[in-house]
Amino acid sequence: MNIRPNVVNFHFVDFCNYRCCYCFVNKINRMTSFLDIKLIVDNLADYFKQLLAPGRINLVGGEIFMCSYLQEIIDYINSKGIDVSIVTNGLLLTNEFLLNNVNKIKCIGISVDSLEYDTNIKIGRCCGKKVLTKDELINKCKIIKKLGYKLKINHCISKYNVNEDITKLLEKVDVDRFKIFQMSIVEGINDCCKNKQVTINEFRDASRKYLKYNPIIEEESEMKSSYLMIDSSGDFYIDRSDAPIGNVLEESFISLMGRAKLDDASFVKRYIQLQG
Ligand code: SF4
Image 1: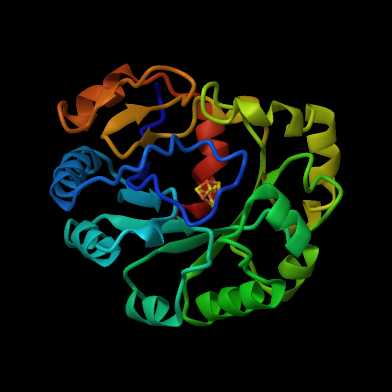
Image 2: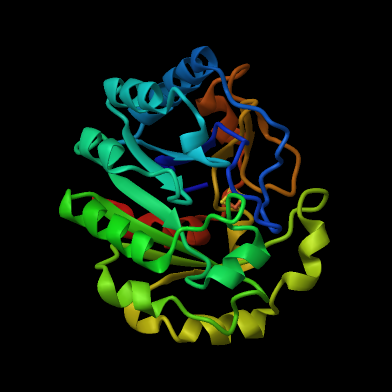
């Protein structure tokens, strides 16, 4: 492996306030304890120290705002000199949180699969009947930008939204990074949604309408070996459909990375635009 990745995705919480039918998170109602999070961050800090570029931990769920000690996690990661980014569905993202975390978080990612109420309800991107409306979403994105955060939008394409578009959002907000994913299947977790997956040609066609926003377009096959992921039990994966490489609570991350077979080209495509 030539690339030495400096971004690790930590899925420390399985809970979510949404219930997207194609969610690939193994929702077994688990959240990493703060004690274990500190051990994992310390382990990652040793790995990042070996790199020339600063490290970044991307906090992902489930939904990260379901965790009552999220702020403590962010502060602890910061105390180790590691950058933090987060991904959220946005419903529980508050102005107070944004005001408190300027200079603590490098990038805020929001997953947006549809701007339509009915589509979000069909997908399960809702808490009861509550969805984030287009105007609420635009407002939150504008505040994120006004406060100086980098803003990322993640957009997953499936049969539900393949004929829609979210340009009404992209026109109104200056997004720093826009990622489009082909909805992927992880056997045993979301395979019930196989019939909602778009073909590669449908995905490419649907992505084309966004080209003027310079998206990072990720086909299902490209996601397989470029996503460094630690789950809520500390298991470390490069490919979610494979067995874990090992556990970061039991082994040094440096040693785990020695066994990771990363697809360098996909990794560069995934992360290069957020460096620097
Ligand atoms: S918002 Fe994300 S984590 Fe939550 S159910 Fe949907 S896909 Fe899964």
